[in-house]
Image (tube, rainbow, N blue to C red; front, top):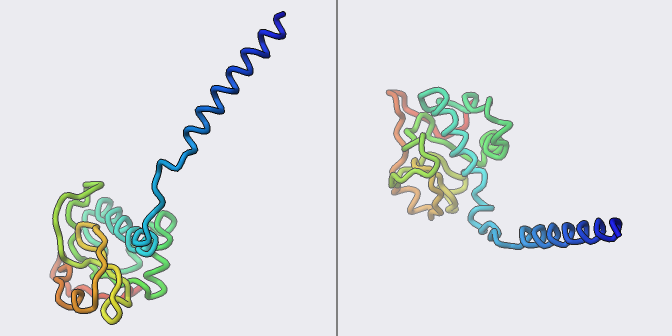
Length: 157
């Protein structure tokens, strides 16, 4: 009798657990959009830049400044090293302390290298991602250095 009761309790537990497990495995999380997939390295770059600004209280001046964050943001650093991404170094990042900044911006902080000629994605100073045509890119304001240096667009080591 005790054995049957244990089996019955175990069966109820397994049935409940499998029901909860199945409910948690649904597709309630939408698949990432094509834009998110195509711009992941820029998104990572925005977070690496933000991490640097929060830690150092200034904007990075060159690629080597971000190298200590490579393990956390590998796609961003790879994109910079390969020349697929370019940055306006020392550009001011808006609201770095905010996970989701509310500030509006149209200033470009970083971009895919193909953007000036073919169009592509850009990272704005509020960490938003935007797709631009070459014409939009040319006329868009660029991030200004936070200091008196000129800032560059190439990922110089």
